[in-house]
Image (cartoon, rainbow, N blue to C red; front, top):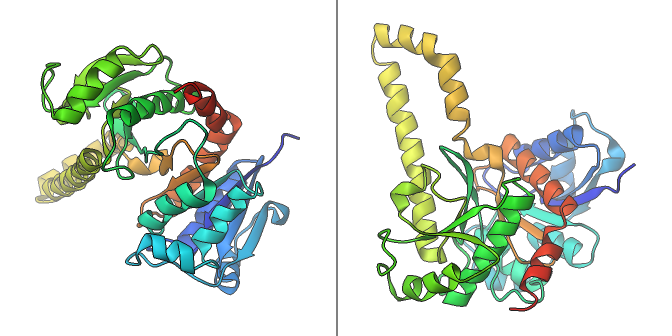
Length: 335
């Protein structure tokens, strides 16, 4: 039997905790035979969520954590003072080598701080970027960074490009992934000071397949497999991406149900429509990994339901089996 991949799950984080978080974890265990999950949270609440679910008991362990870090709490202070919180205890399971990965739908700030402070960065990595996989017309793409480093420098972005390429090639199975830098135009001379400084560094980097600038409007078309940016621009792009998708879905639904004829047409088109729209469902890709750490930390949406939690855990399995942290360390050791 293959060695089990051990994933710690923040059972108390997110809008739908603990029920949806626990259900997603159990769904992952039932789907993946070489997985063990550690459900970290208030023991009584977690056990209630587990009641009625069918699973192999030896591959699910409840780790009691009496405290919860709330969304509005200052992240650094929360990590320092709430030592018995589900986020802190889950991070320490990774730090102590008891787990390979940790996922949370809870406080983004606390997850980012905990990843940097408790899990720690791989030697050679200056900054750990948050990197969600997003859907495009040509398949998945990686947006890196989307929220962890708003004051990144040019050499940080080069590291992001290298880490993103390693992730996409090994986890998403995209051979020689293309890399673009998020910019306001396609021309090399365009952009702010950071983009202008970073562009030639990426252009001359032998470890990546750099294709130049990518405008935000080109991201959904799948122009690049890895889109590099600092966190301020990346987070704006991501939120716009998510908001546009949600709005368009609402408009489409409204149009298809506005009249009797449109309802009939919608009924006929529904199977093909569902198949097409599934490719643009963010839930299928799981959460956003915080790359460059000694162990994997994944942040899922605060509104995550069971399917996203399950896919986030399965994402951790692939990441661990492909030894991504070690590959990043080897690639960036000389930087």
